[in-house]
Image (tube, rainbow, N blue to C red; front, side):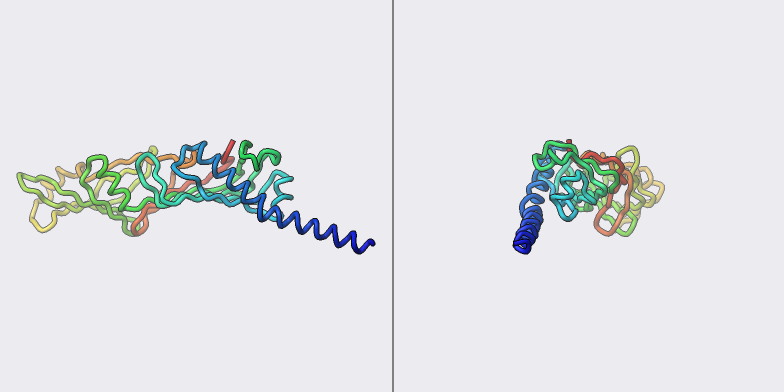
Length: 232
């Protein structure tokens, strides 16, 4: 009889753990994703993963070791982002309200990152009335624009560093060169500002990004987080 009771108890524990992984975790992730979308007015639900095993025990304690969130191909304030990611650690919440999606989920630490492709940035600038072609390449930014110089339409290449300051991506070229024609450098320099641009950096899921890395084909924006409120 004792053996049967032990076996039944073990089976109940295993069944509870399996139920937590198969049912409770997906429901909680869906509820958090829905709340994040509504809270930050995103155009789609993010993909949320709540880490920690056994899940139901972690939920009962009101604490998960980590959580991640990801959005692919979302558009914020007219600018398409290739992806946006949150990586959070030491996640705390009210265990009685998590599954319902109406409680606070707060992370003690974490990081956020967003990538913007040069193609999408070009499209955004052109939608604002510009005619610039942006290229990101290993830490440097290049811009090609067609300018009217002394009655001639001239393609001009410009290159320099992309900066992130005061919540804006800002580009002011260091070097200019005309494509296929001879234009004095002193004359080209008068058009320097025409090949620069500034773009407001959108806050994604309430995160203001403060770090910038330019890679081939894309710019990566990032931020370190502390005490981040994911929902609630």
